[in-house]
Structure formats: structure tokens, C-alpha cells
Image (cartoon, rainbow, N blue to C red; front, top):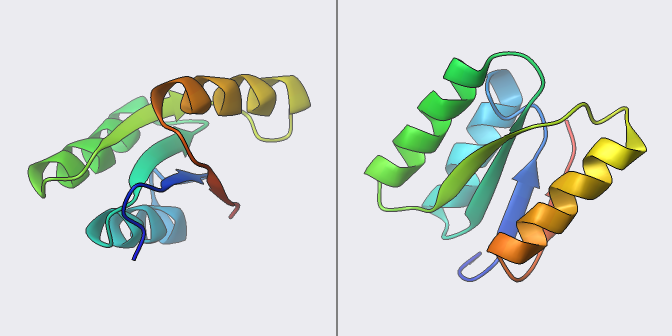
Length: 88
């Protein structure tokens, strides 16, 4: 369903965001695991996705900052080709 698509999931290190990131990855999306606090938790989500054959990377960003979000999207565009943005 999401093959060859990219999902930038904010708050993806825990809770609902984590669940969304994992579900999108299971459905073929390449996932940018955005986090603001726990790098370890974000890396854990990335490792789960990769262990299941998916593609993901973690990116620290405060989504209240336009410039930080802009930088995250630019980096995602360099690494992946299409963006679907989900905000939590």
C-alpha cells in the first residue's frame, strides 16, 4: 500500500506515533522516526522496522520550530523520494 512512499512521523519514538510508524513500515513505507526527547527510544523503533525488513532512520526535531521541520524534510527528500507527512 505504501511501497516507495516515505512517512515522516512526528512523535514516533513512543505511544501513538510509534504505533503509526511501525504500521506504516509494515505496509511498505520508508519511515523517518522523528523524536524530540529520547534518542534511544527512536533508535529502538528504527531497529524494529529494520529487523522486519523495512527502511527507517531517526531524526531529532522540535516540530514547533519551522526551521527544524524544514531541515528535517530537506534531509528526508535527499534520502527518500516521496513524502507523506503525519503529525501527532
